[in-house]
Amino acid sequence: MSRTLHLPTGAPLADRLFAAGVEFPCGGEGHCGGCRYRLPEGDWDLGCQARTTAAVTVEIEQWSAPPLVLTDEAHLDSIEPQDGLGYAIDLGSTTLVAQRVDLRTGEILKIRTGINPQTRRGADIMSRIAYDLQHPGELTEAIRRQLGALLGRPARTAIIAGNTAMHHLFCGLSVEPLAAVPFRSPNPGTQRFAGKDLDWPVDEVIVLPSIGGFVGGDTVAGLAVTPLSEGDALVDLGTNSEVCVARGGRLLCASTAAGPAFESRQFRRGTHLVESVAAALDAGQILPSGRLSATAPDGLTQAHVRQLQLAKAAVAAGLRLLDATGTLYIAGAFGNYVRESDAKRIGLLPAQAPIHAVGNAALRGARFLLLNPSRREQILKDLLTRAEHVELAALPEFQDTYAGAMSFA
Image (cartoon, rainbow, N blue to C red; front, side):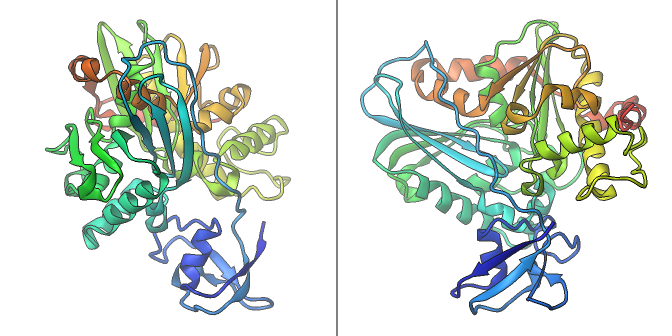
């Protein structure tokens, strides 16, 4: 499905396309063909390669829709009253949320949201890591500037929750250890900055620590406000999906390379894609193998289906390998908006599992830690002591489990 855009002058066409909501899945390298555009009655070309700065009308091939940004305003019972203001920040791979909070009452005074500017250099984390290795510092500067623009009044503290790649890219740490197996960084811990060094109107900035691999501070924050009983799991579905399961007093945590299927602006953060595939399965337009029949619905391609298969297989394999047998607490915008019946129909979530959507648990956890300064370090220590990172691909049964989870049967 295409859409016509009327773009003003003032910047390279690729930048204006991005600002209008066009994704560059391969980070602008010209490999994927996902950003095709054309001038009226012209030939299709790649938007990431465009250079004109004149005002122009173009047709874009992407089905573009504003991304759904999930905020969180759940009441927190446990707070330690302090003077002043603070910020809780969800540094997502795709979207950003900053809450201004009254530290005395816990009241959320202002919420601002935005798009992570790093998506201009790739919809997935590995594309951004590759870009940062070639252009060190550019993505760090972009995300610090964009988050700073979401803040307003001066405050005491800002707490940031993001996955390991976002943690490193914000902090200016080398992402080279995250570029290849075993994805182990020597710098997973809490990072602190003086606000003045970032040109932010805050006294201190705290970036929450990572657990291991790509399981980062967003998961730590989510676990802080989502107590898990034996067999329960916290599942955050997004570009970088995480699965954490409570087992024997431990928190077994793994990341699953879901890619952009759950957050693509082409399919309204992936929920429409899941709905479309579930309906097509029921209608016999998609076989259990994922192959499209001759009567496939308009707008749904074989590439879309395969992308979803890879994403859902990664998450389903993680749940099976970590032995999630209890309630699944689903975090993130995708999990909040997708229909449970559709997620189970395609095999993304186990058919018999109780499901409980917990919204933006990362943002809520960041706010909880912001409002409990005297307990913050102990809470983080306890979580990190219990948490154990599991590299799923290193497990001997991973390949068979992953391959088995590809089917829509």
